[in-house]
Length: 238
Image (cartoon, rainbow, N blue to C red; front, side):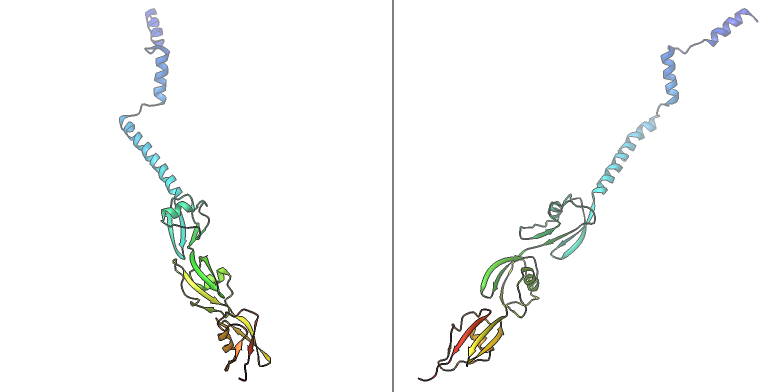
C-alpha cells in the first residue's frame, strides 16, 4: 500500500466535529431531545390553558353541593356553593331572628345531601284561666302551639279552633281549662267540671238556680278556680 494512503486514512479516521467536545455534547443532546417544530410551539400554550381550565372546573364542581332547604314546611332542593348554613340562608334571602329555629345551627358547615330547616317564630298573647302573658312559638297552628307551650287543653275552652293557623303576625288566644268547682247548696255538695268564665256560669252548669234574694259566697262574676268551694246562701222571709 502507498504510504501516503495510510497517512490519509489515519487522518480521516481522527477527524473531529468542528467546535470540539462541547459541540459534540450539544449535538448529542439535540439527538435525544428533538427541537419542537413551530406548530407544536403554537399548540403548547393552548394545551396548558385547557388543562388549567379543566382543573379549575373540577375544583368548582367539587364545591357545588345539593342540599334540601325547608322554610316553614315549604321544602325545595337546590345547589349551592355556600360553605355553611348562614351563608346559604343569606344567598337565599332567608332572614332569621332570635325567635326562629334554624337546624342545623347557622355556623354549621355544609356538605352535599344536608337538610336545613327554618321555622319562624310567631308571637302569641296567651291568656290561660285569666292569666295573660306574651309567648313565642314556631308552631303554625293553635293545636301545635298548645302542645309546644305545654298548655293542658283537654276539655278546655279555646277562643280559636285547634286547626286555626297562626301567621307570622301572631295571635291572641284565650284558654279556659277544665276545673272542678263544688257548690254547697241545700245541705249537700254539687261538684261540677267546668271551663266557665264566671261563677254564675258554673252555677248554671251545676243545675242550681238562685231565687229571690239568694246569693253566693263569692261574686258571681268572679273567675272559678280549680278546687274552689262556693256556698249558695238561700235567703227566705222578709
